[in-house]
Amino acid sequence: MKKVLLAALMLFLFACGGYNYEKGRDAYDRGDYQIALQEFRPLAEEGDASAQTKLGRMYEQGIGVPQNFVQAHKWYNLAAAQGIEHAKTYRDQLAERMTEDEIKEARMMAHEWMEERR
Image 1 (cartoon, rainbow, N blue to C red):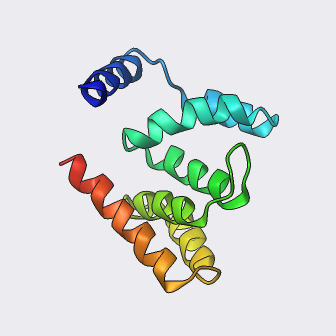
Image 2: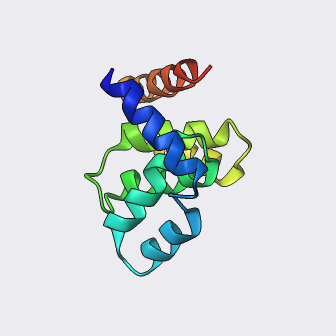
């Protein structure tokens, strides 16, 4: 029930323009990573490939979030699946620093994310 309410709230805010990629990018550029995360995460969860790429960068570099290569790979993979070429490049470069188990976990997470939204 909580997930349904949260999803409904996120959809409402997204539809009302509550989250904004440019606001997130501006916050990121000025080093306000808390605001950037607040803007990017809901957009990424809704499928915005640019926000997914930025969120991947934040996780890869540990900017505003704890560094987490599995999460970074997941977000890059989702953005790459939508045709974002630099997300594919970032994902492939990151994979060189990951174990096979980490890559499998990230792929599984991306697959589950896509399945939940079908």
